[in-house]
Length: 347
Image (cartoon, rainbow, N blue to C red):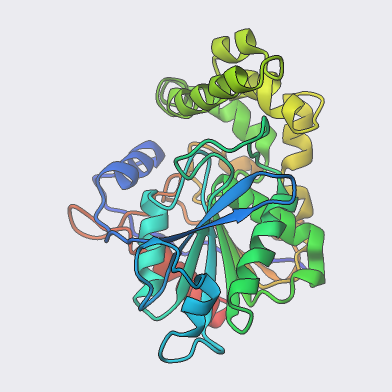
């Protein structure tokens, strides 16, 4: 059976009339609470590390407790046995400090959930140890992260959500795993660039895309990569990275060759999650605004493109990870409330 399609509106204010304003305002101005996290560092099998930021009622922000996160969660009152937990994967160059991560984490923590934000390599504020970084299709890494957090709270009802790049990686993982991911109670992909080829070309065209979003991403991506070039001479084509004018040129120069792809086109094709939506067996919300400037509406999935475990929610407005609603100065409460409703009811 095909997926279900929901077109219920996200009630964005009239003075944010289109996708760019809804995206930018939500990121810079919309109101949300601030959340502190307890940080745990985990060694990876290849000699690198990832940082996990945890929040839960009774968990003190700062370094991980001396006895470890698992012990701290087990000691919570009331007992976390059977409690709800959420693993939240951030977007390109995002972190636990990103506006959407803060809003979602606060919403669920205030309702008694444990929330963890696993950082992709190099995104937690400290360079990772290896020449490699992270990419939009690294579902093996995401699987390692999920298994790691599951071990910390094995009796919890685990949910997973991914935003933008993190959403694409999560949906790819779910499509590849099928029923094997059934230990997750539910999942959600938010503003995921489901077709990386179309999304990549979209970011490379248009005045705002080329003058605002692309330079914003390239500024930190180039800086991190050129630092790697100094640490690992000969592993990075420094000239091509430094001269990259858009994400395709950057992915051609660094992301693709470093992570086992022939070029950017090969990377974008093989890392896209849209072809794998039919394999998802876990109840999953795929939320994409139809005016998202990062992904044109014409390439969004239709019900026939996904399994019956998937609910496609495609409101007309919302922008890219925007979804700001309410009176001025607006809030970011609609998105976490939408996730909570789906996790609770499946609708």
